[in-house]
Length: 239
Ligand SMILES: NC(=O)c1ccc[n+]([C@@H]2O[C@H](COP(=O)([O-])OP(=O)(O)OC[C@H]3O[C@@H](n4cnc5c(N)ncnc54)[C@H](O)[C@@H]3O)[C@@H](O)[C@H]2O)c1
Image (tube, rainbow, N blue to C red; front, side, top):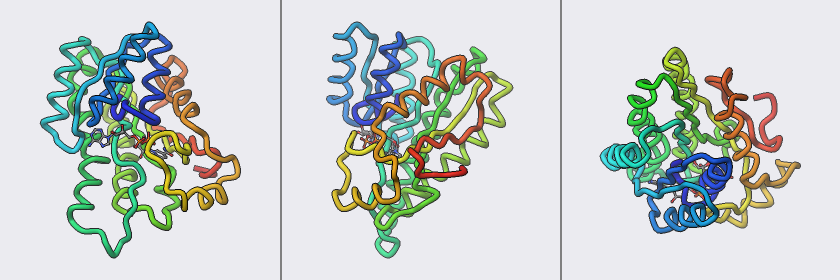
C-alpha cells in the first residue's frame, strides 16, 4: 500500500487490515506510516510500515525487497502514494516541477510495479491497482498539467500492463477518484466551492475508494482487468 501514511492510502490500509489482510504501509513519511501501522496492530490487525521515496528507483527496490523478506509474498500492490493535485501554471512549469511530478506520480508507480512482478509471476497471481484522478479528463484552474500528465500516464500503464499480464494471472486496474474532501493533504479553500459547483454529489470521503479496492481484490474482481473505474461521485459521466 503506497502512500499508506494518510488520506486514501491510510483508509485502504485500515480497511484491508480490518478484513484480515496483512498490510505493508509504505510512505516517505515513515513516522506517520508507523503510527498508522501501530494503531492497526493495536486493533488486532497485521500491519508493518516501511520507508520509500517513490521518486527514487533504488529506494523502491529496497522497500520491495524488505517487504518480501518480512511478509514472503505480495498479493496486491496498490499504487496510491504521491503528490496529489499539485498546483502549477503552464507558464511557470520548470524542469524541476515537471521532473518531480513525473518521477513521483508516474515513474514511481512503474518502479513499484516492476519490482513486485517477479514475485507475482512466480506464483501466477497478482492484483495491481493504480490511483489516477478524474481530473485528467477535466483539468483545473490551478492544477498542474504535469500532475495531469503523470496521472494520465497511469491509464496507459494500466492498459499496457493488463494486456501483457492477464495470462500470468495478474490483473491490473485503475481508479479515477473524484475529490474526497479534506481527507489527507488539506484542499486549497478557494478550490472547495469550485469543486462543489461542478460536483452535485459532494465530496465522497475515502470509503468509496476502500470499497472499490475491496471489490477488485476480492473474487468479485476476478473477471475485471484493464478497467478504468470512475469513482468520482458523478464528476465524470460516461467514462
Ligand atoms: N483525495 C482526492 O480527492 C484525490 C482525488 C483524485 C486522485 N487522488 C489520488 O489519490 C492518491 C491519494 O490521495 P490522498 O488524497 O490520500 O493524498 P495525500 O496527500 O493525503 O497522501 C499521499 C501520501 O503519499 C505520500 N507520498 C508523497 N510523496 C511520496 C514519495 N515521494 N514517496 C512515497 N510516498 C509519498 C505522502 O506522504 C502521503 O502519505 C494520490 O495519488 C492522489 O493523486 C486523490
